[in-house]
Length: 89
Image (cartoon, rainbow, N blue to C red; front, side, top):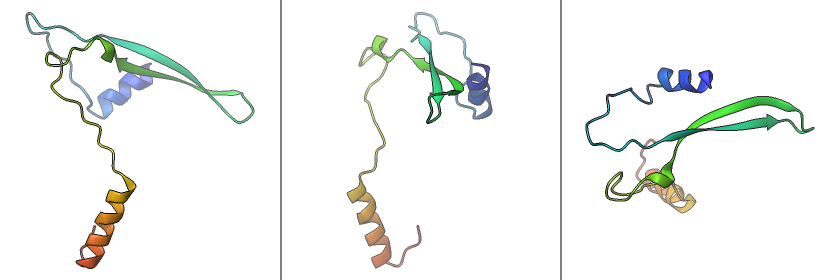
C-alpha cells in the first residue's frame, strides 16, 4: 500500500485538496492481488487504490466518458499517410 501511495506522489498523479462545502466525495477502496509465477508460487503482493465508480452519477460527477484506444486500422492509416508524405513520427 505504501508503494502505491509513493508512486502517486512520485508521478504527481494527485494532490490533496480541502473538500468544498456541499460537495460529494467519491469513495475509494483497496484491491489486493497476489502475483504468481508459472508454478503457482506467490512472487509479489500488489495493492491498488481504485475509485468506487459505481457511486458516481452522470451529469453530477462526470459529463462524459472517454477511453483513448487506438484501433489497428487507424495506426496503419497514420503510418501510411506519414510514409506517403515523407513525415517523421
